[in-house]
Length: 111
Image (cartoon, rainbow, N blue to C red; front, side, top):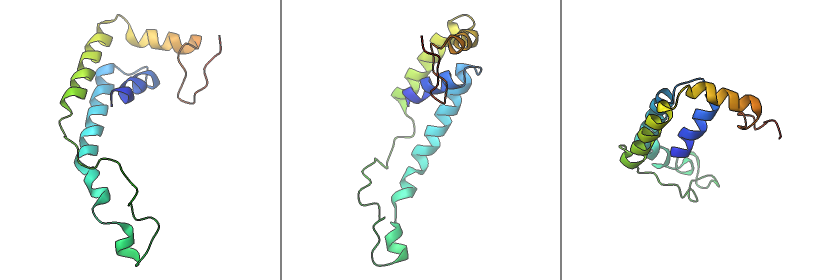
């Protein structure tokens, strides 16, 4: 969750960190609300007697706390820290141009 926020701040370097944080928080809130719906009844139960794709081996957690209190607090702290830096977006753009930060496609300039 926190890593996703940091990664998106780099990828969306022109957006303010508070905007990125709002999008990440909204996504994970709705993900945690709806995650249980993906594993209530397996596709094999509906389709036929046997199917290799019946989610038996999906060991991901499916009940989440929707508040994400600790993770959202860390993101809020990082937003305050990032926005207190002067010209945050200009610094990120300059780092992308010099190749210090890789772009979304993974291609950065080598030093």
